[in-house]
Length: 399
Ligand code: GLV
Ligand code: MN
Ligand code: MN
Image (cartoon, rainbow, N blue to C red; front, side):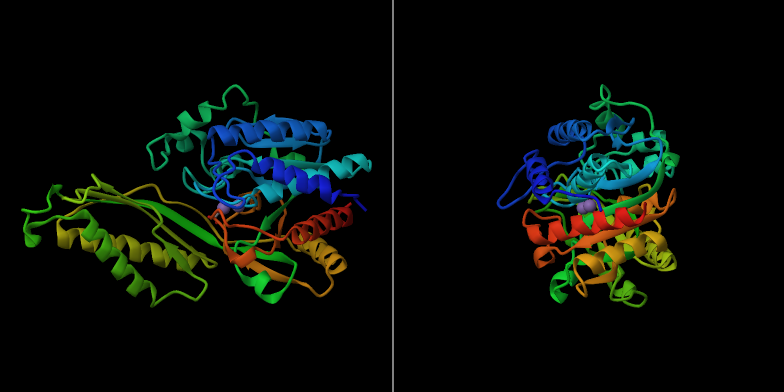
């Protein structure tokens, strides 16, 4: 048994929320490399040290708290969306910290902890773990820009004085990430815990339509090269075309749009927007990509618009490790008998990247109202503690 302390775990979770606390309820604004994010990482490094772990930042700001030469790794991320909640990522880091600390106090097993950087994809998709995994080189990452034009290189330079060496992945025997579900299913069924079987794949790309900026009062409709109208038509057509090939679990989102110059009396000369799509089958992601590229080219040709596709980022769907899932399932049955389920993850996680390096598993706890990526994100503290106990039970079973 690993004697985790729920009160200490909850206090750390509330303390972490103070970095970037915003909005009503338990909201957080702590995007990667913001002052709040860097301060939170320094605070976490101190908590790791106090827990007997060796803190180490790597060149992109991933923070590891290392136990022993070889160990299990637990954790998630501590950066947030531009408007986020207190648990997305933070739960996995702080729960991992509590299990690692309690394990140290009990004389083992060694458990290391990580907070990956930019999981929320300010520079694309799970940037910190994607670079750590070796799928994206540091040079490629450095050239990425956020929506405001800040390069990854400039951003990570803010943490240069903390940066150490890369932490070799072969120090770790496996990775267990706890997370809030961020969807409605556990709450709807009254279950306390979800053991994740697989994580969907994702693709994410920036698309630009370029037209002619002009006067909104004098330019006749038939002479306009309006970049927004191109985007609107593109959106209408992909919705219709996707309907032919998707399943009820497929999702796609245009979540960020920047019109230039974005004024009421100016025909927009440029529309830059994010196009993101997710599905459990890699082949469907490819079919959707073809529809996106073909439809954008068709709309651009019809409306005499310039078209540019940015770098396509993404992760393939991945399966969780059977052995680690079995340990989580056995612990779940002990902590909340009959009140847990196996389920897929529609959200993306650092675990997707790490699964290319070692066996990986994930545990979910319910999200109140199924809400996340919003200040209102929350989970009942009883459920947070149930998740912590399942994690500790699973780690004890892996010894
Ligand atoms: C991660 O936050 C995601 O977008 O799924
Ligand atoms: Mn997350
Ligand atoms: Mn998130």
